[in-house]
Length: 265
Ligand SMILES: [Zn+2]
Picture 1 (cartoon, rainbow, N blue to C red):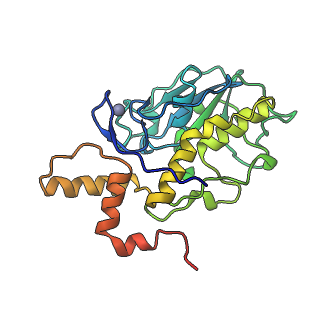
Picture 2 (cartoon, rainbow, N blue to C red):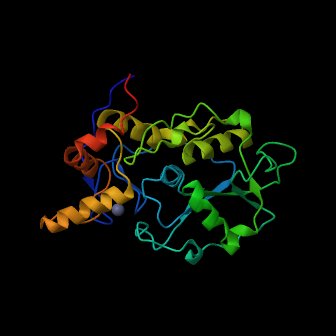
């Protein structure tokens, strides 16, 4: 595969923070390279971010690529790293007859594209860990919506294979995938005349960067790095996300970082 040069960091004109992935996940603006064109999505997509979910969440890529059809709901836009109660989230009063949540509750959850699947015009995608998704689903606006899931044949073959800074490896879950892959596969099932591959633009770009640089730090590691910077009276205190701190973490904790790499044979 063609090796992409790591882009330089760019300061987001909206929030003034330095960003290393070519977009600002806080302000949802593209900072580098623009976006590929995308056919209209077959449904509207509403993304609900758990308060402790990083602004690197891949679901946000859909909002960058299809801003007219994708909305994002999270605690005080831009401050999603705070510890937040998901029940405090301000969510719309969705119509349960036309809205479904993409969440596999069990084998009986209707599969998108199957005859048992309720029709929906809006797909709600939860961006959180599995454990925290339960807390989100208790939100009264979400608890009353039907759930749908991807059929087994649409799972598998995920490209989401990078490790996070804490060594967790979401891509290793059987049938697991990133949120943006789930959105793309869902769109493809609903409108097979398009592959919606362009939805994976930022995802694949991030993957190339991770391959080149190593795992991205977790939010907790980023917070620790900020604390360290504060103690050392360095000026760059604000929300420096992604690779810069990832690299710093790697330099400061080489032994620990070593084991985060994919298993070496
Ligand atoms: Zn910004």
